Image 1: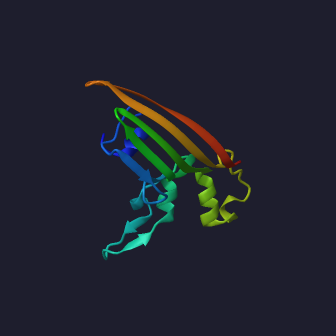
Image 2: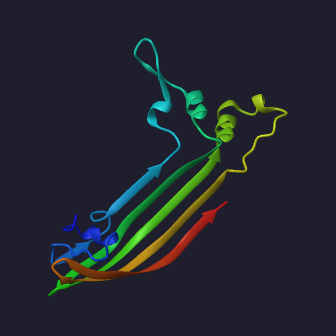
Image 3: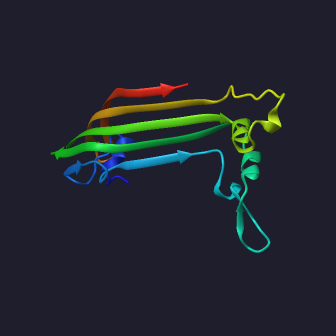
Length: 167
């Protein structure tokens, strides 16, 4: 997608078709990603009368010993791209948040059933952990066509860490 300004995020030699581009929070580049260890149909089972019922046992049975729930959110606070002759300059400020939670399937079993079924047993939560990182990315880039088939460019990034929580 060479005409899209966001293409410079993955290809520093990209030169968008617009001579000027300005990005503002939420209305320009925003992304949300969610990754988990289960899928929608793991949560329910179909009953003979064509209705559905929540099925937590099935959900837990589909999990591995260690599972990952992960999300990331990115939004441009400000971006500016300018074409001067054959030169393309761009500047970008992006807010980034990444959160991951690793958990054992036994943790969900304990939450669902309580501790009664596990009296006298050893539950292993050694794979359980939480990590959250919030940082701001400042980007400065340049691109220029050299020939009809060759463009050169580069991007410098400064990452400003704001918070990190981990267990």
